[in-house]
Image (cartoon, rainbow, N blue to C red; front, side):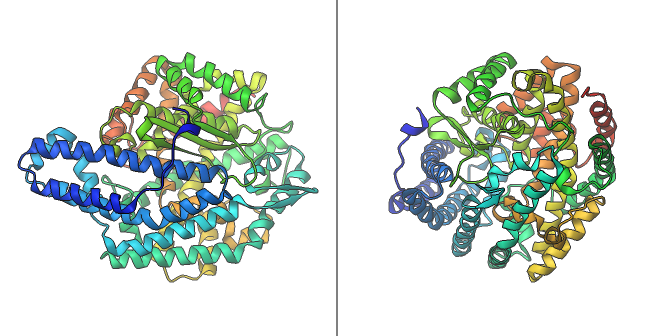
Length: 559
């Protein structure tokens, strides 16, 4: 079914509550494992229908944040999603405590019960806090989506700025950079207040649910069953020792290539004197060539991308009133992924058509999973599929960039290597914030700048506002997805492994990757890494092993 034809109906909360309540009672009163299995299967289909409805509203508001109908629906859902989640927790508790636990584990797997255990942290006490949290996230998104940045007589949104920030004319990109920074500076008080309120709300929720702080609670809510915040801290140290020094060397080479002696932050997005490699066409050109690329990559990827086009499951181009960023979600009732993005004419458009398509391909391959919990893996594993697809599609980059394909590959690998220290900065900052919830906005900003200089000691913003520690205002994940950002870095290390393996044996690597995609969320992060024939970034020396190889690979890309 085409996305435009998918109907949306506001959930009838009285009926929804009744179904959750009846399901809980049926589970508790069931006389056999077979009876419980049938109830769980029916409940899974009900949830797929319910969450599909919610996602349709979310997507349509993302496409136009000023749509009054979907804005009202989003407000309604912001109020009611926490109620749905706590009702779901009660059903989860009934399943978790089943007297037929062994039989259910044989049917659905032990990982299902680990996920259920994570859900048990919520109860009705969390509802008002989650409602407030949702409202604050929406408030942040709306400010960004409706941003107006005046640059050289024209008006831009935050999403439309990246091409300007990559301009080969240094004065031009510096002006663009300052114009963008000015927008965030003008809204500093709003961003500080929104985040301050978020931190307080989340901390109060953690206390209400019996946690010392929000860190441990959110790790549970993120379904992290293999590791804790101490393991993440050790991983950040590995990044500091291996990738921070390499990132500094990469930027030194970039400055040399650009002929700049006083390299600044606003120079980082421009990789070449004659400009970055941008795709040789518009959105139709990109989609047409992506269709050819995926049809040649494998039979499965070809069928998947044809399905996305035929059912109009992508909204790709940046425009006013559209939510910033990009994401992939799923409409499980229709066994359909959906890709949302903001194409802006830069190489980032190809990052999207590969990265978000990696998510979508995994979702497409996992739609046979009965349990909605198994369609998607946890976030740490989910990003492996997306980041790896960026590399698995390298042989087709000439379709998009022509003679500049190698420039794109260089920028992609350089960007991935230099991204990880930034990613762990964001994570380290959030741990500080929620371990010190009474810190003032000024103290938070000061700490952020201290941390970014630790992971990126050569950083020079040449901007007093950013030097105050406010750069993170633009990173939406800090506001609406606490502790998610480290997942990108963990997955990037896994994607690097697939890149090196792919260059050695394409067919074997693609088979391993597809096997991982089919597994969906049926296993934990560490177990999925094993299924994908990868080494664990947390408890092995894989970073020490691959960083020299990646440095050599970057050096050998002919540009």
